[in-house]
Image (cartoon, rainbow, N blue to C red; front, top):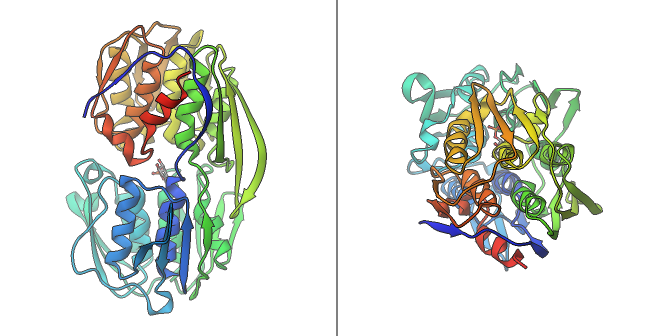
Length: 428
Ligand code: S3P
């Protein structure tokens, strides 16, 4: 589906964003093995999270509607997950596939995981290798590198594993497998990645310790069920923060957004560029920090992004390029080659589409360089089926000199259903 986005004169209002995608996936998967009913309030009702709902059902745990915006997961507890009767389709969700592989690895069952064209191109060797070290039998297509993957679970040993890439999905996969290990499992991170799994496991009674970059989980036969309120997704709010920053005269309040410090790299980058973002009413909800974001438009300067900022802003790095097109000077993003193995090769697709809009952007092996400011022009661009790219292009369109058509814009629903409607409501 194509979507035409008109330039905006100013963005105003109070808005909410849908529930956090990472936390929704984790609540569903961990709820399935908890002892009793887990209630997930304010869950993200999106394409990606539906894949986790269906997967959990296929493993024998009922998931039911429990009122507006709420799901109930009937945890299987010590009875354990059941072997699915068919291949489990994770659609486009890397989180579903990688976390599920770890979750099932400690059970006596065989599970085949596949996904859509995009997911079947994403690297799985990063989970196959350590899960094998733990004692699971794991096979994948093309030399065990790509989905479909097959996991034959069983008794697992705890391992001490240094992650070759900073990835919360791989870390979480191993922590979930570690719950069923015969010894503790330690995962060492090259850089800080989102710690929602650790927080949720602790809330369910598991013993998880973080000592610097090493996270250790003790085997846990029983997990207590949760009643959880999912905060708004900062990765979705980021598009509105960028939009209100770029469109002159804007002032927007985004309520109830998760501001876990392992996720706030984009806010740090945007502020370093001169963005005017204030956190109000900071509070703790369900073990996660939450705040309201107050954003006013601002003129921007360039910045450099690398190191620990990269995993803390990984999903927002396409959006940083959009800000950079309007900043006065050269912005560089490096050490971000992980962008190339997301829903699309986000370096290649970003560079081709922003160039079509008139941006001066160069591709690097591990990131990109943008020279601003450049006027952006009315044209047609493609989402390449990548939700974050679709939304980043929509934000760019707000400051273009005429309407921009985004091909394949419907994929925004994978993480932010109603995105275009929220943008339209903010138009003063
Ligand atoms: C996620 C981790 C990140 C992120 C993805 C969600 C998670 O992926 O890009 O959108 O929920 O753990 P990696 O762990 O592959 O970096």
